[in-house]
Amino acid sequence: MHRVVSRVKSLWYKITHWEFWPFAVLYFPINFYYPWLAFKCRSLFFFTAANPSIDFGGMLGESKSAIFELIPRKYLPDYQLIAPGDDVTAKDFAKQIGYPLIAKPDIGERGRLVEKIINEQALEKYLVKCPVPFLMQKFIPHPLELGVFFVKNPHEREGRITSIVEKDFLSVIGNGQDTIRQLLHNDPRARLQINFSHQRFQDILEEIPGKSEKITVEGIGNHCRGTTFLNANSRISEQLNRTFNTIAGDIQDFHFGRFDLRCTSWSDLEQGKNIMILELNGAGAEPGHIYQPGFSLWQGYQSIFWHLSTLAKISKANHEQGVPYWTFAQGWKKMKMIRAYNRIIESAL
Image (tube, rainbow, N blue to C red; front, side, top):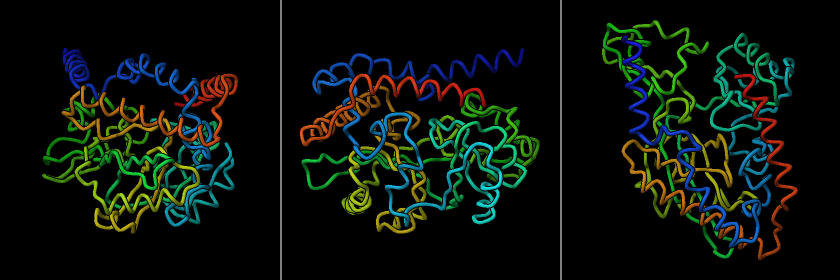
């Protein structure tokens, strides 16, 4: 009976908090707006012109390592692309950068198969599990993890930041009595997003944190992995805009997307110091601040629609300057490849 009640509570929490709605449900209205944008641009795949140097404009199926090649090395953690099952290269690189490290598919989204690898045994398990080429990245312990959305129309001299999301990792506060498992079960967010049977949690779930002790349970900054997204738009400033114009200006033909990064402090971020870019997402990026708990659905749609409209304007402006849109045949072939690839990823989950 207790389990039934718990499931009902979780379902009700999910229904009444739109940030947890399935992607297809939340984005259903886009099915009506997107055709209008495509009509205005005269192309179903207009977004491919937004970031000409990124495959498919960065909408889906782009290679993270290929995007890294566009970014100045000073902003990147040490990384290596690993072929499936290549344990020799993987272990050699792990010795170079040390543990813990981050492993994630070179092509992937929504945190699938992203793991924090703590030792060689965990790396061996990941090598067996991951069926696709993957990136190994040096773990960056900087305390702030952010998603900074930047847009720049090619007709304008400077771009601007349109969204900042601050990521608060899933954690528990101990009471000196309950296990981490019990504390998580009392958290509606954790009940919705954590797979309690996953191997990566087995070593800590039965621990009993001390009173007022904070334990980070999931250190991967993805909403699907329990991270709370906080609206940090109040941090946008002229200095921060100048900093990201400098960063984006060093990336060939980049006009629209979100920098997922870690930094040491807000002050350093403004000054462009101690910044490590973990990923750069293109046309398919979301303005993550909308997932702030309590953010209204109407405000969320306003931001989504505005960013889509801006994506179309940038794509059209680039097209007018000679950047071709992908043809329907090219785009359809890419979509089929992405679906086939995602089936491979899902088979390993």
